[in-house]
Image (tube, rainbow, N blue to C red):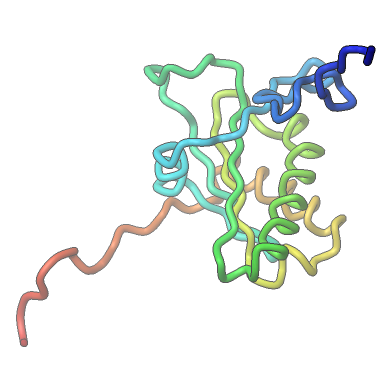
Length: 164
């Protein structure tokens, strides 16, 4: 008779395939939640932005009417195909996730959404300490109002008017 098999779990005891939706920091700072919905990314894209050598940071303060608990910091990561193939895009996102995990608990503000966008060549090749410094500087600029909002589109969408 064979013994019953134990359910498959990861080293932290979670079931196979389950990932934590919230990452809590040991120092008692605000928890980080990963953005998942496209609408959240679009809202962040229309707010403040700060470019660095390694990535682009988009940030916005959430409205009080939004159905998200107050003391949370939400973070999203994205890398387009311009960054490279899937191996390079995933490596860039892993690097962005790690700098966010290290830096955001101390410098980010609760009630804000942040999106880190990888840059072609730079996010993967840049020194990790420089990426961390980039995030520190970008957060300081965002919260000191040095960041610029997204510029409005100059040309209207739709059929071209005028000469033609």
